[in-house]
Length: 147
Length: 422
Image (cartoon, rainbow over all chains, first blue to last red; front, side):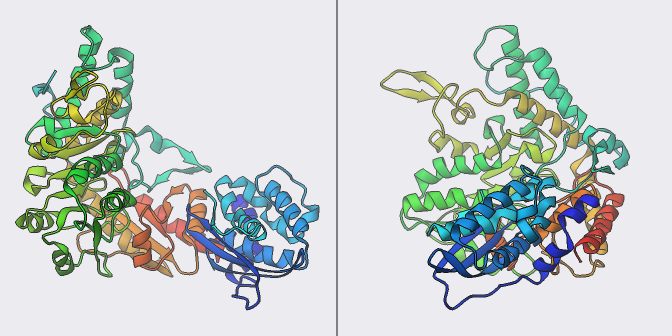
């Protein structure tokens, strides 16, 4: 039960039920699709890049609580960040959810995903939005898959 | 070599009465496992079943005492191994009530059985403009092999639709059968909905137009008696691991005259009668379709599994599982926000459901913490998920060792899901 509470923290449940920036923006200039065949999670991430700064982000799709909350928190966290900062955060986030790093100082709100490391099968859910972001930043045409 | 017949294994279809689930559970060592400190409640039987001690020991005994390659050696062990392997074939023949044991081909599983038919029978019989008819409730393994074939041949895959209960729409199915139909390939029992298809009527309808029929029996053979002669189907496929046997072994039944006419599937050892660099003569049935060293120990284990279910009696197993199903449906109906997908009038003990506002993957994670193992996802049936407009479902599937207490554990687990996820 304690493991479940660390996985499904209030912030995660809140973002999964009321995802932020869940919309189709009119002025995005980058987008990418992500798909997790394991559970059928599917998201589309929209970016508005202003030079190398992420001016706006939004997403649409359907997925489990972890993947939806992760996408929602990603869009909140990355607004105004540079693409280099975003890539760096992805690295730290990945280390957090795979249990490679315990420190969460620089992750801010994203620290709520620390419980994922106890559920290895859910790592793909937590990182789907981030892999999709990477694809959008690198201008990938093909939908990314977690498999 | 050749057809082995053994009278000594004549235990088939002698029901052990009355059906005693506690005694059955004693046969399955894994059911004593604890998961996250809770007793295991294993409800993922449509994915794979657990194995009774009788199967585990049969495989072990084979490796401890009889292991050798088959059909080749003149030494004692090879003879024993060959005998054990062919005994397995005879057990399967009796289990399916096939006419002859050469109509039983050992493969890796249902998937390989269907691919075998697609790549041999299909490749020879299907041409440009021809059609293959499947249903909307097929597993990917009874969709993709036909798609590959159709793409290669310029043929067309026709899909018989289903209604909201998850039943084949009979008139629509009949409309799809025509002069261009080369094969009907449908599932006997749906792995997602539990729907039992009217396979006898399907075979009759197809045969009126001389169309052969393949039945995917992966979800049927473990849960109800199957008689391929009574069904008169042309091909029947099932997997060992879903009927309490080992993984990596399965069965393709085919009518002898069809199998005779089909080209081989894979080339290699055992499937030939003579080889020169100019010409190879193929072996007779069933060996023509069994290239390379087969899963001998797997066949031994499968034989033990068939003995096991036959000793209990498939009629008893089916009746008991129906009881569990009705109990589960009654109790799940009372869970707030729960919708079951598929309400076929003929239904096996498989229940797919969704909980309002919750994703199946989260439901599965919480249930797992309660010791309850269910399947979540698309169950290798994405077109079926699209039909019911859900991205995924949670699936509880029952087997002969499940209990009414376990149904209660599932329901209690679902209340926990609400508590944790809101």
